[in-house]
Length: 296
Image (cartoon, rainbow, N blue to C red):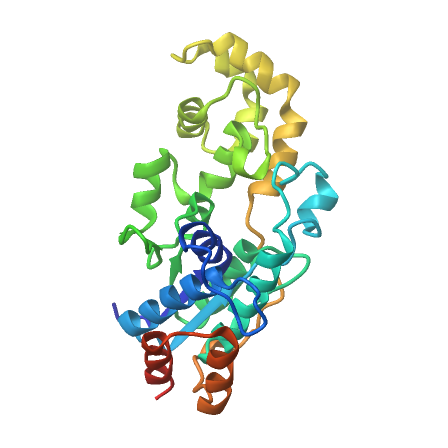
């Protein structure tokens, strides 16, 4: 493609994956566990070696209880346990590794990583960039424009806007409405009772949007849909809740991200700082070699 690409990485996802997949046998010089740091560093090295991106950023979550969504709906993500202190510390170290490699970090206490990635995409699209979102999270489907891609790195699967429809049965601009209707258990968003994924997709295929569906809910009983009359009753009863849930499922595009494209250009890291970080984290010789090679 002629458009330059920016790779936007869902950093928290890959830290959590490393935390769960790496054995608990890695410790820093002070004896603290750093298994997630080692796993995340290997992932990031491989990504940078493979892609060699000029423009790239890693977004991290720092708003598990302070997101603007918590103010709207206190139960948002209330089903999730807070990261234990050991993992919280490793998140900080993963950010250090990212910055030491010259990769810009996006983080905010009111907006989530999804919002930072969405806002960066929106900004860079205005500069003529296409975006590659490195994540397996289905929520990102709503961000994909004509030239954009999502990349599930672990499974090496890529898809664009058409792939969103193949996976969910709705188009990118309908994903937030879809999640508001059928809910998202991962984020503790209940959705409309009795409306599952297939029903939500069928309703949006017919009506186009959540707003049109709720405005024309009297038409629902006449659809060739199992339990259509009951579904219409539930939609009437939970209309305001559905609108609230959409405020949670819609990725914000106004999070504080740099307005200029060069702010997400990968910089050259410093060997001296990297050496000190490698010593502190007790990286092995292979990881040290890879890190130093990525600085040149």
